[in-house]
Each structure stands twice: as structure tokens, then as C-alpha cells.
Image (cartoon, rainbow, N blue to C red; front, side, top):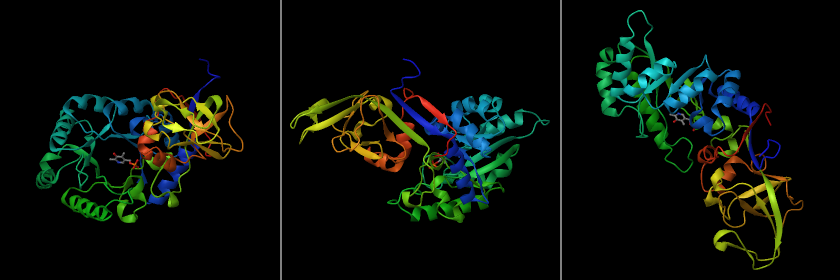
Length: 371
Ligand SMILES: *Cc1c(COP(=O)(O)O)cnc(C)c1O
């Protein structure tokens, strides 16, 4: 295949990412804003999006895994990179070698990192670390019994360490149907934890937390999805659209009333129907759950998926389009007509799973454009 024929592409607007970063930082101020670029920058390509963010003034990044931090380091050489998964003993040498700052999630994590810091010898600066306190998500971070132990013994347990951040993560910030009282409970628990530990910069809010009000912002916010155009309630989401997924129409055809489309014949034409077959499928991350539910845009209008999404192909019912796409035309699966939030809902998922699900088979194309 040659570069001038691409059956599909995911265009990433670096200018829009930079604008979204500035918007979030302004909303969060006077708190500082980091950028969460785990899972390869939510599928958009960390080595491209992180330098764009650094160019917009971001000097702090979060990744989930050690390997992600090692891969990111050369692309943002001056930035602080926090690794959320902690500091297992085997991870310590690589964390140090690549100047990655672990987010310590347990007392054993703390002990391993403190031992490494002390082993460096007196003439070296103490190692930096963040500590993650679990305030109710019950996923990662110090449990309440570990917090009590640390609170009683922090002088010994943290000696020889530079505490760069105390953080926690909200369970219900972005879900309107969720338990909103939970946010307050976690905020109170986080404040209580901070009062029990030595003073350090604090961080609680991810993207949605930024919109919960100034109580939640502390010293640093940690947006991820907002940088890529997602966020809380669409109505008050000020983020610019970042990702545009397009694919070619490989064929069009007319079928008769009663004809079926695709595997298992789940779509049956109720009238003479025009179809367009598009070069994307579930191997690309177009969820099979989107069968007969998703849609694609062309010339500002939409055409629904007809039948099942298959591995490499999906089919559109373009009958009602005034301007119908033809063979070779590009239709939009995600972008300015097909909005992230709506597409995620139609595919039976959320913005996060949608973005991180696009497979490496789809080439990423980068533009400095903001819109
Ligand atoms: C993923 C993650 C974030 C970013 O969350 P968004 O909802 O994408 O803004 C922040 N903090 C932690 C601990 C995370 O795991």
C-alpha cells in the first residue's frame, strides 16, 4: 500500500489539544494543570501529543505504566513524569534511570522507594515521589488502615524522600447519574488525609473534577479526556474537538426491498436502499456493539450503519442523503459532524474506551490546526 492511498486515517489536531490545555489551566487556576497521557495519549499518540502540550506550557505528565514513562521520557525531556502504577521493587532501577516519579500506592511501595532514595547516598538529592491516598474508589492507593499507619509514623517512613505530591482520585465526578454525594465524601476524606501527613502539594481533580468547583482543584489538576475534547456534560463542555476519524467508501450499491445486509442478515431493506461499504471494522476499534446503531457523516449529513460491523468493513444506509458519498469519498466516523460524546453513546461505550480502542492499523495524522 502506498502513502497516497489510505483507506482510513485518524487526524489529531495538535492545535486543539494546546487550546484545550490552556482552557483547562485557566479554569483550574490558580492550581497548575498536568496532562494525563496514559494509554499512548488515549490512543492519539503520546509522543506527538505530549510535546504539543509541553509547547502549551505543560510541565507535568502522568502515565499509567513504567513502560509508558520510559517511552515518553525522550519526548518531554524537561518535564516531570509521574507513573501511576507505583514503585514495585523491580521497577525502581528504571524509574531512577529515566527520572520518572512514581505514585506510591501502598506502604510496601513507599518502603521500596525510600530504600532506593537512601541507597543513593547522602550527596544525592532525595528521590521525589507522589503518594496516592484511596478516598473511596477502592482501586489504587493507600487504604485507610495504611493511611493511619503512615500518619502515625511518617517521620520514619518518609525520611529520605521528597514528597512532591499527595493525590487521590474521584469515583463519581463525570457521571451525572452517579452518586454526587460521593464527591463531597471523597473531598472530606482527602482533606482529612492531608491534615494527617506532612505538607505537600495536593491533587484530586481529573477533567470532570475541574468542573466541580474550586474546592476540588487544590494545587494541581490532572486532566486527560478534556484535552482530547471530551469532558463532563456536553452542554457545558468548552473543549475543542481533537480527533477526526475518516474512512473511504470502497463500493456503493443499490439493493431491493427485502434484501439483507451483512453477517447474520440483521438489516433488511424496507425499501429500495443505497448502501456504501466503508473501510473500517471492529479490528480498527469500531465496536461491534455499534452494529445497526452507529452512523457516519458526509457533507454535514449522517447515514446510519446498516447491519453488523464486520472485521474490516461496515456498511451505511445512504438512501436519505441529499449528497451521497461515492466510491473513494471519505466519510467521517468521528469529528465535527459526528461528535465524540454522541458517537460513544451510539456505540454503547464512553469517550475513553472509544478513543483508546482505535487500533494501530489506523494511521495517525497530525495537524497543528485548532479546528
Ligand atoms: C486517567 C486518570 C486521570 C485522568 O482522567 P480524565 O477523566 O481522563 O481527565 C487522572 N488521574 C488518574 C489517577 C487517572 O487514572
